[in-house]
Length: 200
Image (cartoon, rainbow, N blue to C red):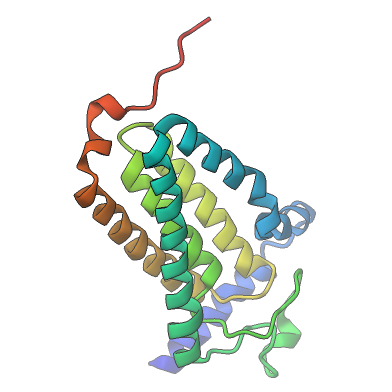
């Protein structure tokens, strides 16, 4: 059974890593997975949260960082070091079939910390803002999913690494989000809605 799962995972990996190869993805997806690409977004969110919510905004930033820390510790230190799955680009038997489009890295593959961390933050924000701004749900999922998918395309993670990392991240993000909701229920009251933009 395990052999069949691994074979399916490898076949699915090749369908993405090789089957979807095109010049646009070759250029775009390595950029999407680069953390420096998103630095302006993170800076904007920090300023936005603090500007609109004051002390609570500082707390949101702190809880976002805590969510990231929990997800990264769980994926990178607890799960990866226990499972010890080799990355596709480091597998001595499989790596010759991999189109590697980014630095492979020496760490283990399962679960993908990129997927875990970004889905954790995305779902934390979804819990906080989905009733305040109607685009939050799909934007957060699209952001996290594009980064996670790029990990397969560039050749550094298998699909199951991404899927399980995403599920783990969702659970962590929902958990920290609902803890925030429990201890700071006033934030979710209608009076704390993001001000609507007045048409010119």
